[in-house]
Image (cartoon, rainbow, N blue to C red; front, side, top):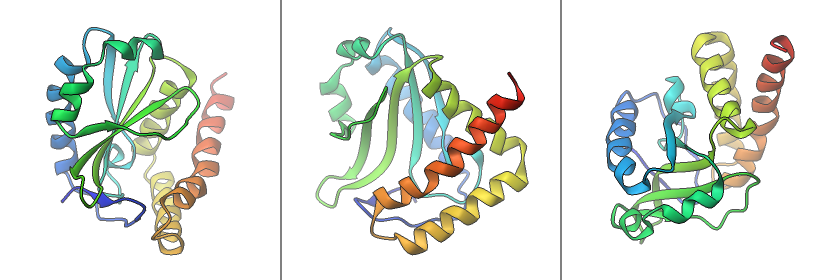
Length: 177
């Protein structure tokens, strides 16, 4: 079952339903987000097929972040998607909530510039871990350890993963430049 309450961190066994959920959301989002969308990709741990938080991450690639003005926010809200106030460089994040009362998030939309460094990093990380089971397992162990330490601190959990993610992407870029 998808979803976590705000601030909590729990790692679950891989659920193949996440792929189906991504496809369903992509079909819903495509007409809502409009013509400025170049690509929509399933990213994050649920796209890799490993133990993960039960939240589906979706990357939405657009020409420039200003193009988001064409998004139909009313229709997004009708489908329980709300723009988060989190401030990230080169990214706007929406979350889908199954319960606004309990703030249970089931999906994240990461809106980024298509083919930007951020877009490419999301896809590189996903594809490298899909192709390398040992690296994927190393990531799972890190996530499980962080979840045990920070089960009520989503931000600390996320920050704890950053060095691993950056190193994987940096190593890939160093070896392919």
